[in-house]
Image (cartoon, rainbow, N blue to C red; front, side, top):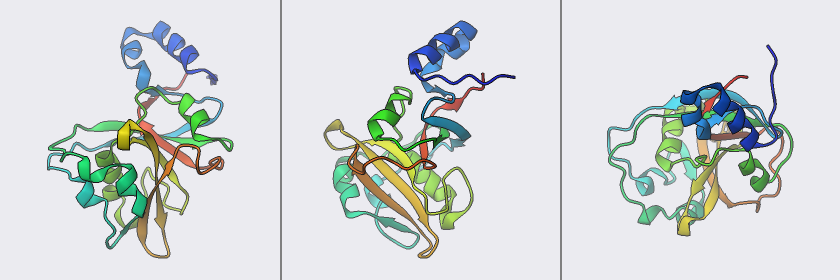
Length: 194
């Protein structure tokens, strides 16, 4: 079996369109290896059946440290309580070389923004640093999230084994410089092997 790498998401979508009508319908969230990103794992975030309040969840407490700017940039107080949320597939993509957010996002599907309730689901599933999709070795797990004034921010989540807690931080796009190779980008989607 040969593996094909695509440097252009449009080229990938064209190939997927020719493969199957069913794949064509979901092509915006299907991921494969590209120049900067290599899919390494996938999972499904469980459906939420209880209300979720982002302002309540994302506050510093035992097992979780939330950076002061997170609430402001992501406009937590203005967010409505989410009554429920469907399950959603997610993919972990390994960053193959150092890259800026703009370059990373060019290789992601249009609907690559994560929700705060889904990120909370990862943290809840991996409480106390349990193994799972998120790196739990102090390396950053990078999510892209819509924040204040519809601006996209980076939500970074990493496990601190010394303090035994998840650290949640945020950055404006490209303000952190280039993300180092080996970091993990996590976004909604599924993996296709060609």
